[in-house]
Length: 124
Image 1 (tube, one colour):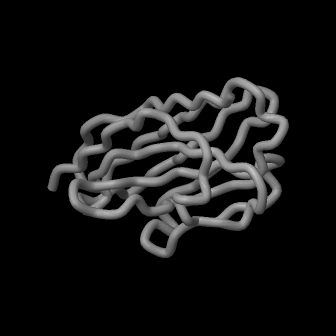
Image 2 (spheres, helix red, strand yellow):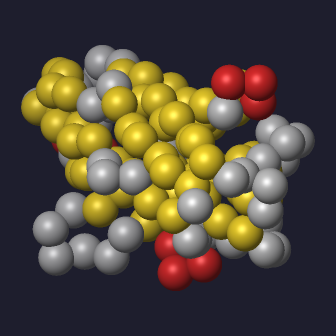
């Protein structure tokens, strides 16, 4: 079993920054990728970015490219999402997820483990 826990959410004004952290503990031997997702009420969960377990390859969604950076700290089993130049449309509940199998997927249905989420609210 793998357990994930997010932290770092909060309320910020437009143009501000936040750094989300995700701790990943448990039996990670089969984990191939971890990712950040976000969801607003009534909407599908969408991938913001993902990174392979070894940190070698990353993907960042077009909507946040140039503003958000995803990274890993392998020896600490941590993942981060640095969010800069935040906008009100970035307001959402942010989740980290971990998956086994093919690492090239942004589909949340392909992810096997999830954290509880951390709320990010951006005011204009």
